[in-house]
Amino acid sequence: MAACSRKVVLLASLALLGAGRAAADSAVIGASRDNTLYTDGTGGLSNGAGEYFFAGQAGSARRGLVAFDVAAAIPAGSTIQSATLTLHCSRLPSGGTPISVELHRVTTAWGEGASNAGDPGGTGTAAEPGDATWIHTFFPSALWTTPGGDFNAAASAAQSVAGVGLYVWASTPALVADVQGWLDNPAGSNGWIVIGPEGGLSNARRFDTRENQTPEFRPVLRIEYATGQVGVEPAAFSVVKALYR
Image (cartoon, rainbow, N blue to C red; front, side, top):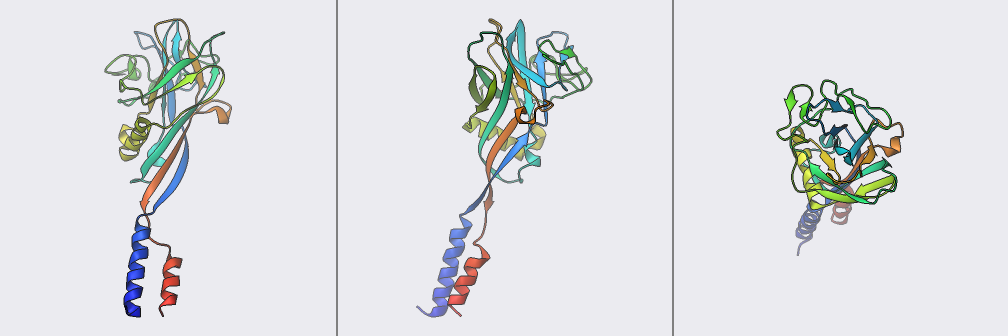
């Protein structure tokens, strides 16, 4: 084979190898909004600006909401490879046994207003304009289709939560699909509703929100993603060119 032909073949081979390589990267994203839905037929309770949200049963059901602006942190067109959610549980009933806490993808947009139930926050406070409540997506006029939130019936992930501490909802195909959907369609990025066992004994867990005074206790979404195909590094072509001059 002539030197020129060998040069063309080698360059083409390197280009093909390079085209198959994807640039892998990661992102750590804080919550863009969060809130609590307190069982209340009038929709008068919320905790949009509070330091905590709740999931489980405390006399009546509480459900947390948490969302992330994925499209602002990850390049459009990327492929999500894994996603994990970390929450900090800061309070639970005395003598509480472990409970399973599920994440369900929310299907309707919702809001975070200025309501703040303080500490401990478990009973909520008067909803403010724009707050999500048990019946409202945005207090006082926009409503959920179903009181208690509109969400996928199937859980995207579940985690056993016992005492105080940090908990990670591990990556699942459903979590990855949720995050990919939020990247591809930012207008549909409504986050997850956080649900514990309901209808039995008091077992609610209190989780820290993005407003919490301790930064390391705030919700975190960790994502691994690939940005697509990249070419062979210019240095590799330079070496080949030098060999065949």
